Image (cartoon, rainbow, N blue to C red; front, side, top):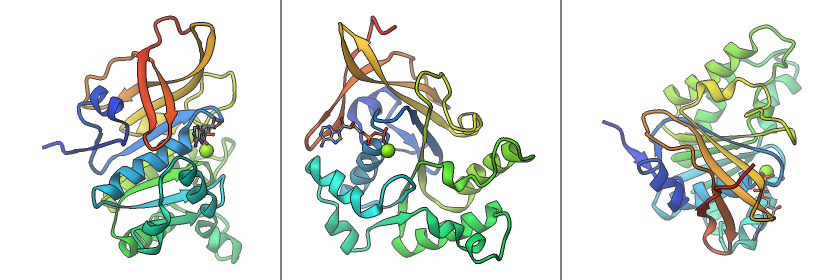
Length: 241
Ligand SMILES: Nc1ncnc2c1ncn2[C@@H]1O[C@H](COP(=O)(O)OP(=O)(O)O)[C@@H](O)[C@H]1O
Ligand SMILES: [Mg+2]
């Protein structure tokens, strides 16, 4: 039986039959400034309010900044951090073995074992990895990149007992969904955030590009970032180019 958990965005839960499937990995994709980090914070905050602990692994921002980002939206996450219900991690510890010269390359099992240790400490049910790119130690020119990304996503699903949201920044003006062009194929679902011209103005927009086991339509919804609520989906952008 499929159990779903709220994405944290009411309108998106409605579009996806109730949200993310428990235990799976989802990708939020978009250019810079489209709202990926706010989505991640909102996803974790919603879990925390429902008694589900979380971990935020940050690659672009200092973990402490995330608490400030959230405060600007009216979300007080500091208490959750102090109560050890929310773990804010820098992505760099995952490079520890490489830095210590113990490994030239890092394999999936090292990354997952490290993650699993944090999950146990926090008793986490939700994880955000924002962005996923620093955990992918291989680059496009190295053989095995595709297999590495596949194996890391599958290992998360098999070993963490968490529902994981990964983000990927995409270069401006491309239709790419992730930095390496692989993650979108192996994850359970893909949410695309963008900035669109709609009714003569730029607006933020969201659509569900992929959602396995879910009859989600492809309508693109304008959204706003509203104090306290965060991302709030609005009307369908019927004239989005
Ligand atoms: N407190 C806030 N209230 C309203 N909008 C905000 C707030 N904080 C950030 N934003 C908007 O969200 C945008 C950044 O979202 P962010 O999630 O950091 O994007 P991304 O992670 O995709 O680069 C900012 O450019 C800003 O316009
Ligand atoms: Mg960000």
